Amino acid sequence: MCLATAYKEKMEPDSVLLEYVSRIDVDGNTITLTDVMGATRVIEGSIKMVDLANSKVVINCLHE
Image (cartoon, rainbow, N blue to C red; front, side):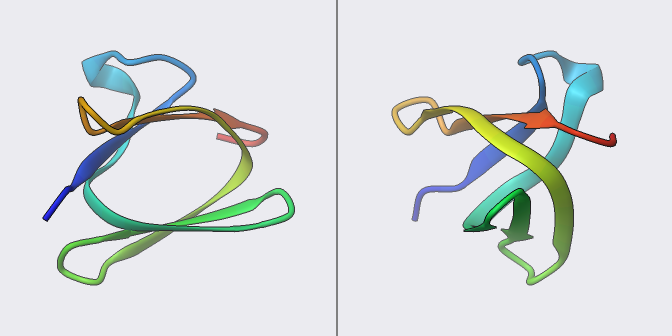
């Protein structure tokens, strides 16, 4: 299983949006992150970068 950490704008410890992300759903500007336990976090923005080899996702947030 491949789990990721989602970051706001840049990959720094204080910009973590959600850890252990197992699913990402995108609908226009709405990004729904779901972790391995089923908890969700909804973000308004766009995906800036996905690094599957290192399990990292960076999101440009509109309102965070």
